[in-house]
Image 1: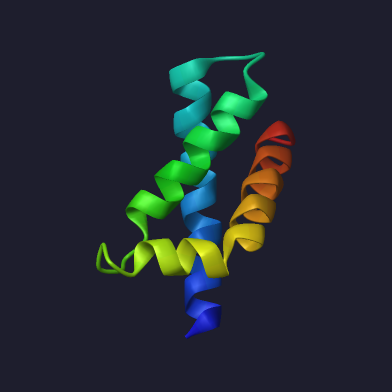
Image 2 (image 1 turned 60 degrees about the horizontal axis):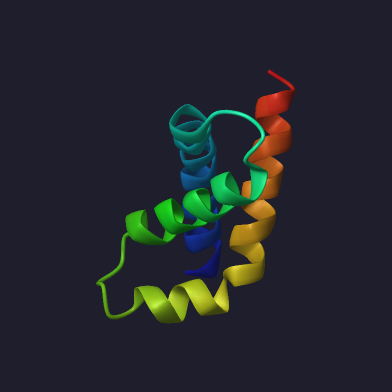
Length: 76
């Protein structure tokens, strides 16, 4: 189960970073990161009552996934 959640988070992170970049533009790194994290949590395929628990359990992983997605996007 955890592998599926991690895989979903990684895919959502790519989309989240793109959407944050489009919405906020450059020079707003912390705002974009916060927006990306919120996007990931909102789009997680779990009932609303479980999302806070999932986001807490995977907070570090979500943060790392966003950072990885940013670096990936810079390389394109």
